Image 1 (cartoon, protein in one colour):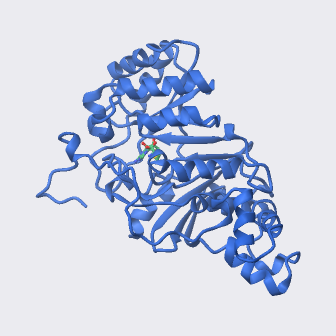
Image 2 (image 1 turned 90 degrees about the vertical axis):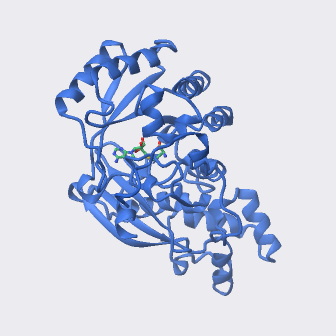
Length: 384
Ligand code: SAH
């Protein structure tokens, strides 16, 4: 991607921004799947197709509760209709191209090919007390953050609700089938920190959150508190999410406390300033009573200075000190050819100390899966 004749991404104003909020028109749509639909819509669809509406519940049970994907195991469906029912509501959505393992098999990253050839990735991370699935919400991303692998290739397309959900169901299946060391288990957490900007694919992402949290067998029956939506800070969409009434955790990828640097690291900042963005996050915390997570990728000599830690603390404390926010520092995972690198551990410790001195709870993200290109978009970028 690096071409000596063209300078690296240098946002020069609002017109240069890759503001891709909407799906390109005129494309073939991903196959329709029961995970795209509410319980009532599944039933209606079968009836329209001249099939029995009550079969929708049986299909939902196979998909979300039994985690079955082989039609031969769906023995409560009449053999003569099975293929038709499965074609109507359970079409194949994606094919695994490659799985990579780390941490003795408890971190598993899968590269998926979608129906139109688009590549996305998901990661399963098993801890002693929980299993987190990191999922993609778009093939590619239009936000162009220069340190992020996905940001370099632009947006290919939005993913459908079912394509998002299927990544979690696939993880749930491999856990249920005892394929992940540690015995059978369930997915307890989902983070929208794979490829894409979830709030730029708002409708499909909200649909996916609903399917994850709908009681089984209409959905996976997870707790909304276990779901984290991570965003560059699309302010109107954060406000919309605030009004949605689903208590998911909001993670805001801030990466800099000042507009000058954030304009460079997160180009959408030229549209929504640090102040506007943090203000929307604060409102989210105030209304939902959910603590917001501020993501901050530590880049050596770029955003890791002691004065920036102080400024970050002041910016966040400007909204009150009842613990509405916590900071999650992410050691930068350098992308190939990138001019940025991870912070010195000494600078990282000082950054933490200064934030804590201002009363901001701060954690340093563990860096699982480094050796399998754990950073956002790196596996798909290598493949294509
Ligand atoms: N678009 C959303 C979610 C996807 S990325 C967002 O930006 O929040 C999930 C997190 O990984 C974001 O905080 C993002 O800034 C961070 N990230 C991206 N590339 C990274 C890298 N090379 N090293 C460390 N963190 C990275």
